[in-house]
Length: 435
Image (cartoon, rainbow, N blue to C red; front, side, top):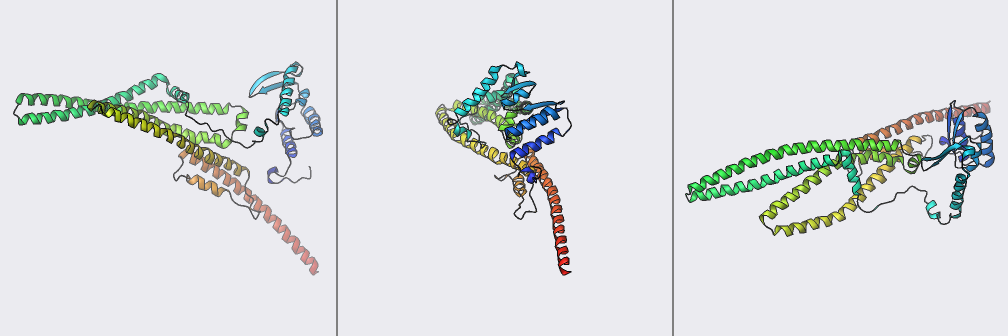
């Protein structure tokens, strides 16, 4: 192993060699506490015993060592054992105080897993990351949580009452306008028949209706402003609490969550999904409430004119509901395909390019950053993706490009030095032959 040339960031090394190099880098750094996450995985028994005796028991005997392992044979070397199951600490005690049944139960589970290998072979073979697709509708509890984040049911009821009042004033003003037109028409008809008393009554009624119409217009305008400000504040509070909850959950999550989910998908939740919640969802939520109340107001006005329009309205509502059942699943599938597969994979590709810069010395070396620049500038659907996500992708591309350029300079210098040495050796050989 001492004569092995490390190239390509250690990709030419075996798993055991990589584990030993990482362990050496960790223990040679002077520290008081050492956290070793299963460093003996992939090593044979003889090498494991040598590392435990020479490294852990001798070299680090005066240090605090937190040794994470799944091998029960290593428990006899520990002074204190902490058993963790699904991110929760189950047992924390000295070695001699750990119940024998716990270790036996763990062994039985491992043996049972080996015996049932044929049954779960299909599940074990699926090592490639995949996601389960859920069919159906969004659970109503998610909307309830959003309402609670905004300010609770009381605040939402108050805002909904403002929406209803604004729609009532708007619909009633339209009804008053139609009445005022009717009174004006009646007053003109009465003037042709020379009925002075009826003309005066119609004018007074028309003037009172017009005054009430102006009051309704003023109330509708004021309620619209109050409605917009209150709803904006409500959605802003919901977004702030939603951001805090999401960040707190990611920071305090167990390591298993980070191991089982791509970093690209997690970043996608903080960019694309939060963009939808902060900008698109409040607008749609407000439009749904406003349009629903507007449709209800129009139905009331139409039905007040003629009852036959009630059956036509019911038919149109049923038709729209049927169209919605076909549209919503297709729209959700397309959104999931665009957000998860495209942008989640792109974030992952950015990370891989930062850790693996291209080699300019190789003849077949290419620059994968061209694809990243293209996807950063324009969304495949033909419009920019958003300020936050665009800046995030642009920043990641710049970091990857700067790292690649620094590596390219170093490798060009190495190649140039190597070429000069080769040319110098050839010239020296030719001079000796000439002599």
